Figure 1 (cartoon, rainbow, N blue to C red):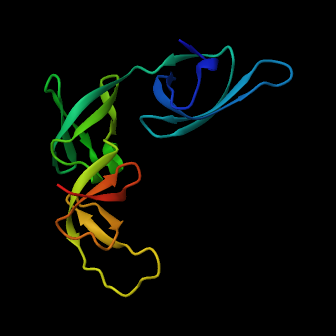
Figure 2: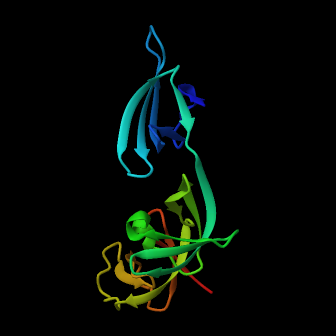
Figure 3: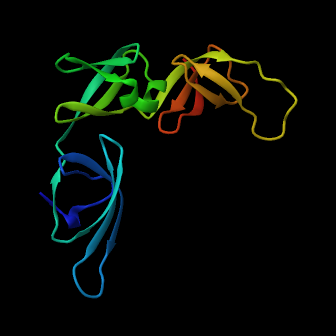
Length: 187
C-alpha cells in the first residue's frame, strides 16, 4: 500500500480497479489542517484524464503492471504481431492500441510491452530507430533563406521533414518520442 506522501510524477497506481499514471503533482500545506496532494492522472487503458486532491492519510494500491521484452514479428491488416523473447508466446495488438508507434515498427525490433492483468496496454519503443528512405523528391536549389527541409517517406510509410541532402536509399535516425529526423546513418 502507498500513502499520499509517496505520490510523485510517473508513479503508477490503481484506482477503482484501473491503472493510472500520475502526470502532474503538487503538494500544499495549509496553515491549519492536513497536507493536500493535488494530482493529475491519466488512465493507462482509456487515456482519460483525472484531477483529484488527496489528504495525507489516503492510501493507494500500486498498479499490478508487468513489462515484458518482446519482438515485433509482422503486421497483417490491422493486427501487429509480437513474440515474447523468453517463452516464445505470441500476441497481437491493434492499430488503435499502438497509436503513432506503428510509424516506427520494423520486423524483428525489440520493444517493451506493458501488461495489466495479463492484457497488453502499452508498447515502449527504443528512443531512436534507423529507417530507410524509400521516397524523396529532389531538392530545388535557390531558396537559401534559413531552414530548408523537404518531405520524405521511410520504409514504414511514415512521412517526415528532413534536410535537403537526404536522398532515396539513405538510412536516417528518427526520434520515436517526437517523430523528428535526428541524423543520417552510415553503415
